[in-house]
Length: 216
Ligand SMILES: [Zn+2]
Image (cartoon, rainbow, N blue to C red; front, side, top):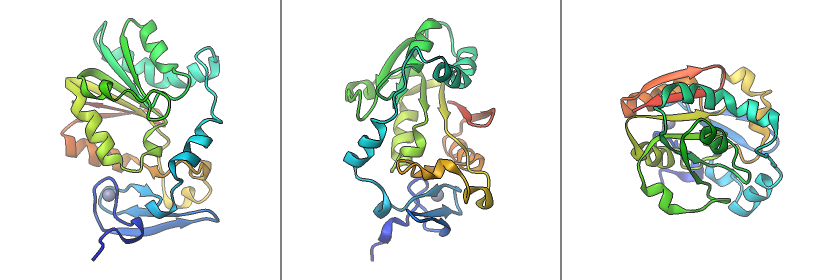
């Protein structure tokens, strides 16, 4: 029997206690009762070429002051936590790396990785004092595999800083603009990140509406 028929197995906890959560004109969304992840079943996700075509429309530049202000919601609290001259990785940096520039301006050394724009697998085989990943986890088809992989690269005492919009409840999800981006397929909530923190035995902090910092 195919336990993942129609892509209904949870891609974070791999559980099968999954129920219909929402349906709109484009896709359906499922909710995992074990880890609370809301996700689009794999058979309704974009293929990589179509996904990249959507990403190419996002043009963020390092000198865009609005974008820098947006990213400072993560770079400011990370800067308060990591030691001076730390070594970090920005995972999913996109076509116009900006967060890395901001952390370098704080005196840290940064590596970059992006599956479409900076596909240098060697950087995923080195240890880091911290890893940042902004507006990335909502795009992951296999969030468990990807996040476990990042967590393994972080040195003891180091940090994983994430930025993603959080699911509040089923009612507000129905009118949530965030779900309408066709590249958004994994939607986390406070409960989902608490699940991960427990799994990893990590300390977790929620900062503002959409910043999550886990300490190893
Ligand atoms: Zn789950």
